[in-house]
Length: 311
Image 1 (cartoon, helix red, strand yellow):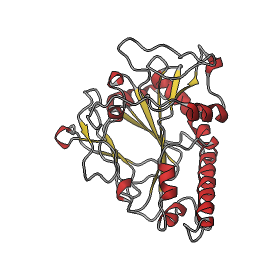
Image 2 (cartoon, rainbow, N blue to C red):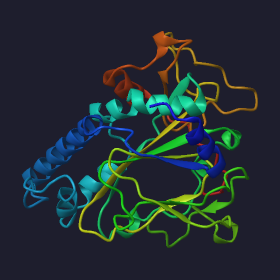
Image 3 (spheres, rainbow, N blue to C red):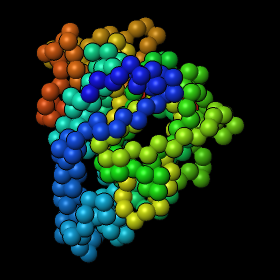
Image 4 (tube, rainbow, N blue to C red):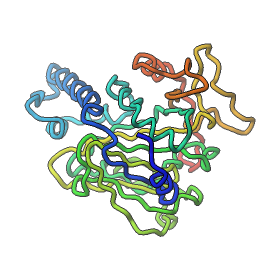
């Protein structure tokens, strides 16, 4: 779904945009089905090894992982690790409606990043609360001034009670502010140093299933606590123009474009990029799950610049 001129202006002015009804249930169901099957597979393995008393197969998508996690957090941790390359995930990541919206912001040559994350925010889980941060804090400083669009997609209704997102609007044109990793962090994630948190009115952004929240890479945002008894499932995906640094290689093995002398190989070198839409290079577009899975599996990890002195 291509964005309207008003939506594009809102995104650039506010630093975020909620797009309602971007997806049908049929667009989301493959990802939900694959996640459900993965949870079932792991649960059965844990029952077989005696690490789980039952598979909790009678529970639904919004509750099963919580029940399993009362006995073991192994399944939760495997999902949060960012390593799953399921067909349903690729189906959503490459959804034409989503790519139409992204094209409205970054142009027709689109790189998708493997820096996607699944977020099963379970009820009352302290580490499920994500602190204030800018996504650029995790990327190469070289890419700070470029646009990398984060797309946050709830797989269930994301209400304030369930722990939806909050943003600080209209502060994304400034610098990436200092981040740190507090010793008492529950999330294990970078967060903005409190004295450097931009001053702006907090906006709570509920998004119903089928919608999406679009953010710039410099928009401060966080998620809040889940106060309900169901899991707030979501995914966050990232897209950029193919003109930015990217580690994607063509079928010949050559880099899609060589990095500049002072530039990194990619905006986030640890994970694999891939061309997801292109008018200029249609033969190099990743069109199927098998190719997607292979790229992620074979990617050579290169550390990101330690800009915050964490290592």
